[in-house]
Amino acid sequence: MDFWQGLMTLTLIHLLAAAAPGPDFALVTRQSLVYGRQAGLLVSLGISLGLAIHITYSAAGLAAAVAHSATWMKVIKLGGGIFLLYLGIKGLRAQPQSPTQNGSGLQHLPASATKQVLTGFLCNALNPKAPIYFLSLFTLVLSPNMPWLTVAIYGMWIMVLQLFWFSAVTLFFTHTSIRTRFLAIGHWIDRAFGVAMVALGIRVLTASDR
Image (cartoon, rainbow, N blue to C red; front, side, top):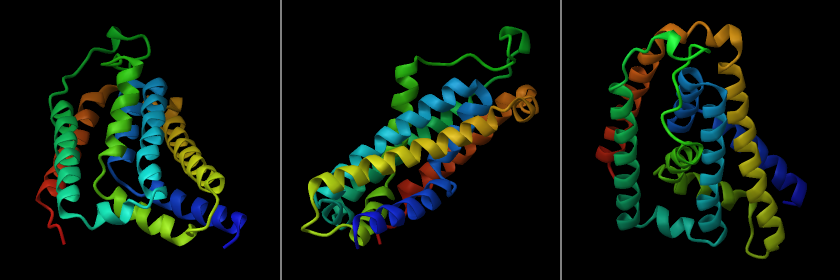
């Protein structure tokens, strides 16, 4: 597979993977609807940066070892499950806020820009399904004799695709006509997000290793 064939294959597969419902999509949607465009873009950036972890160990050939190591998978599952439960509990504790508290009708950002980016980063980096996904993806397009520059370009391109997709999701959900429909029910969005994250966290923690 030459450079451009590999790039096109990565683009198609990763865009489909990014569009699939999961913790990253739920987090970006929730932050966008409840806290606005800035929050959505910040967590989108964090999610994209989180891919650097998976790309690095996959390019180094460690993805197979991680994916087939019971100890490593348990550590990743424990960390990912606990983080999802943490996000879920925060969402479940959301309370209604008066629209007059914020001129836009949105809730104020609950954390600094750095913490927003970090939340997105951890949401992606602690995804226990990532090692298996990247093992399959990189096995498909990479070869042992591939130049490191090509590997680096592929990795950066995947991060750009991730940022592009979730930025588009953010722009969609913060469009005025979309956003205004959710202003009065921001706390319910938070709570629905909380239920989804708790359910995902429990599923991750109780899933069989096989």
